[in-house]
Image (cartoon, rainbow, N blue to C red; front, side, top):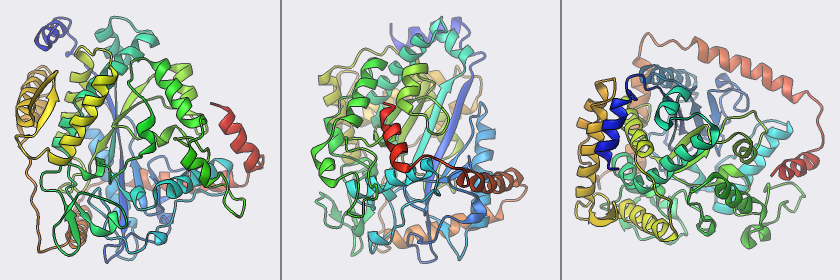
Length: 497
């Protein structure tokens, strides 16, 4: 059944009338000092504990702030929450620090100066730190300072039941896996519309091979690139290319995930689980230390309590939502994303869900990878050839076709803003400024964004303050509890998979 018929049938079933989308955002941003360099200061205490604050944490580095919103069914409420968190953070940055606006980091003079995030003395806090130490010795600290946005998406149980006709977990799993496969097939579109990283500071690839051109004394670029962040110089792992995720069923996904964690990888085994001082520096020596190390543009997820393994949660309870990755920060928005971009993601994900999604073959997986590489490197050139709907076509033609379909979908949504969001999609062009370095441009923009956030009035940050102060109390309480030794804990954690 083609898309038009599916749309017609869903309309007849009143699928769109009470469609409820559940969405949340995780957004990473580097704290930089007044000169634009990654801050070497600890996570500000006024933002609460990065271990126990549910809304403001850290990713790889102490300076890499991660904002986590709750789940919302209303885009305006989600955006207001994102805004209030940014205003609160901005007010609590010290010594002229600002949030870096780009996905690619500023100039890095010495990656040894980048402080790995710490989370206190509890076993779980130490585990988070060891995981990051493992990332540092596996991939280097510089790569881990790449930032972006994760978009968490699901339909309410009622809406999903209306679409599937049933409400058992097995069918939900199939529905979300179908969405994931289609999203993989259309990831080129996300790279095209959300890619904002065609320039990097030379220090980012220091000592590494690359095929970039020189833009000026400080920077490298690729003329028609969409997202160098997603290229082989960006947030990637060569070792993970040995993993075979096709998302055809949950059991095979979990088997592959488990294998990636428990089977030692020669290169990582050589590094050792402990350093020369017998301190842990990796959680495991598999291709993946833990489930979170899987770098893919989308992942199946299930929320759980701290300490529960994602593998076990998915195995026992099934898929609850999908996490979309591979979204560059939008430097033109102080929040890194706009409301219209959220609507475009909604539409694309609903499109992926409602369209037929055949099982993925090895051959198709390979074709998808080639299409992604072509889009990452040459997507801004209209004549670039990609694979779309089993045909080799210019990327501009594929984009026009998909946008037309998304417009049809948008006109069925019960909010007119969706049509406006698709209508507002313009062909993006790369603009390069040889006269100003990426570092200088980023610092200027970071300061402009900071001024803009400070000028916003009527933003309620009381809840942000309360979460921050409550998190410090909870952090102190947790760190006073008696626990088993870390060695016992890590062995027991690894035994849970």
